[in-house]
Length: 135
Image 1 (cartoon, one colour):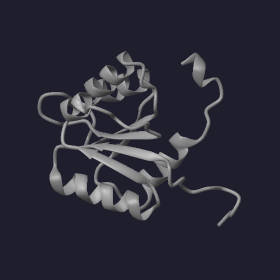
Image 2: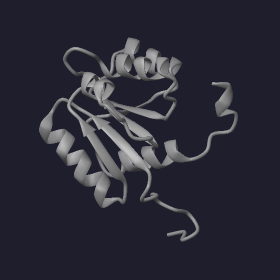
Image 3: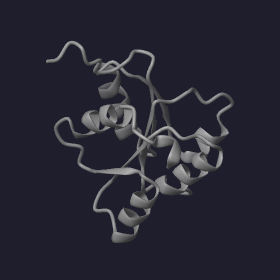
Image 4: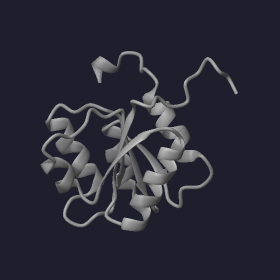
């Protein structure tokens, strides 16, 4: 392991949004074990209505939630000028979801979340992106 590379910053907040309590709690636990600070929300509405959403390094958002899809939530965050990277988690994404995520510069990680795919995706999302101000 390269000790020069910080695997996770204890001040990096990952926001998890998933309507499934078991999945949400499991993701929160797994990410905390990896050294991330995690805030978890049961819905996009809960996140959008939170009084003081924390500064966020990365969002992990379920696509298939009642009321507001993950991509709809990401669109609302962008409308609020919240530009933190987002990862969409879903099973069997449709072509429409894949295309919409691609346009929004959102990575999709398919469920089931195997191995370290999500952790690696979060770490990649947290790396500085060249020309990110031009997105």
